[in-house]
Picture 1 (cartoon, rainbow, N blue to C red):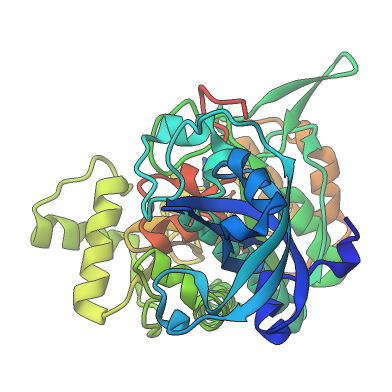
Picture 2 (cartoon, protein in one colour):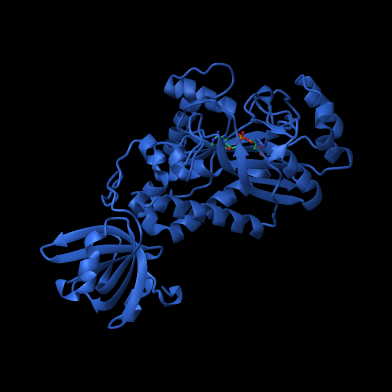
Length: 443
Ligand code: AMO
């Protein structure tokens, strides 16, 4: 087939009365008496094709065409009376009368599940075991159209706001976030790690470029089975210099979130509709100290928390509180205790037991964390020591501060959690094409 001659489905209405070539997947084959109807899908949309017994060769060839086979069709574009009202995503107003049809690929084997029903009602294991096939379903494809829009909107916004896009190594010599959740790799006989975040490199980045952002993989060896963790995700990170307060970091993140959501609203109406959801009404994000949130949890929800941290249930409740009190799907929790944040976090000048830091919750789930960083060499060395770590292990990171680094802060934002909450997905795994969890390394 000469692909140059191929007409995309979305362009078919411009070819009424012409004989054209289309190619794509058979979403569904329906036999009505002697007529065969095929919904043909390509990247731009779906159209109905009809094979009449009088077509001879095509009628013979269509006999072994099954759902999801890949086909090429030569046919006549016809106006379809009343077709514009046809429900679903199939192009109304036109149809193709098939003159020739050829199978490009696909066996006659039965599909493991029915992709033609409006809802793909599979358990998560079946969905992920047959991931590539399941992705052909319109609702699944819609997730990744929205996801791509989120990534593009984030990049566009950050560039517009003066941030330089950087890509940093994912094979690294030291853990950045502390804790045990780091994957070890054999690196030519030495121990290396998969990056837990671009933290050190984005801080190095601002010491050169002032404002940097990165969209890249993050690896976490978390042995949990939860609906919000995966072991590899895409982080939307940013770091900005010459700040006076971490509130400026929150301002920048809020502006980025606003741009992401308004872009999704503009570009993804059909995809949002498939998921029966809409972009939340955006009001200024409320900001609340974590210590105040804990009091609210106790007084309003009767929830006691252990220690001074908030757990997943507490975050859900504070999400409800934000909605009820401020009409906001988002809320910043601020001033996390120093012993709960990584060593690079700036302590509060008046009360060093808390930090200049925040988490951002969206519909009750943490989607980002960030804050101001320590930029003084000696203070940083002291912070490393206080946590029982060896400053020598951070020599090249510390050099960034030895030679001068402006006051700065930034955030790490989990891209998949945005999608999970926007679409109300049961698990974050549905927001990844090929998620990695404790048990899953394939497909
Ligand atoms: P943190 O560890 O809180 O901060 O991670 C930042 C954001 O990344 C997302 N996230 C995850 N998403 C899916 N699966 C996981 N296992 C997972 N772990 C984290 C969350 C989280 O809010 N360096 C700091 C950020 C900074 O201060 O700039 C960091 O990595 O949405």
